[in-house]
Length: 200
Image (cartoon, rainbow, N blue to C red; front, side):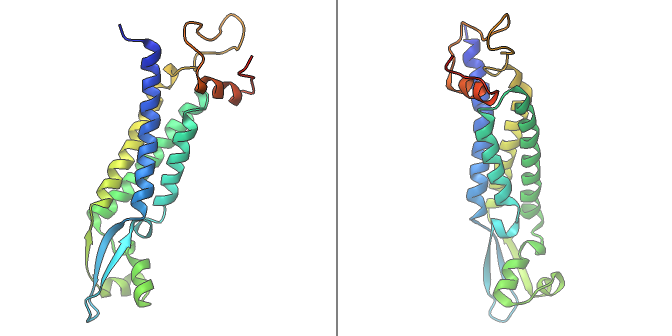
């Protein structure tokens, strides 16, 4: 028969890992080339546009997801739901931004790179000098990573009430910690977050 405590820990681990992996891939993806631009300036120059240049909020959102995933493993029950909602919001935003680049290849995503290379600014003038915009696999990879963050957030919202340590309302008294389950490191963090001494 499956161990209920192990099953609860597994659900927590899956939610946290999904958010952490999605955030990590987002950070890596922000440094990779997302778009290849060819300019119609006689020399047919090719420019490479990194993810952070194509989507300015990509790196900050990915860092936020990483921080959220790390914090999620140690917070109490109420904050788990708050963080679950935040994870879903971050993931949806990152997915939409990544798919916009992957499917639409918008000129505004290459503006900063083209302006830096040519000195030409403004959406209209930049659009006139851009001949083609091609995508690399990275926008799709980042969209998939963002969906991982969404899934992690949803899993958190659905299962947070079953995670270890969530059922303890009182440190001592009639409703205490399940004595059949050992007090693990994350339980100790939960104690500290409530201002209690986990060594007692």
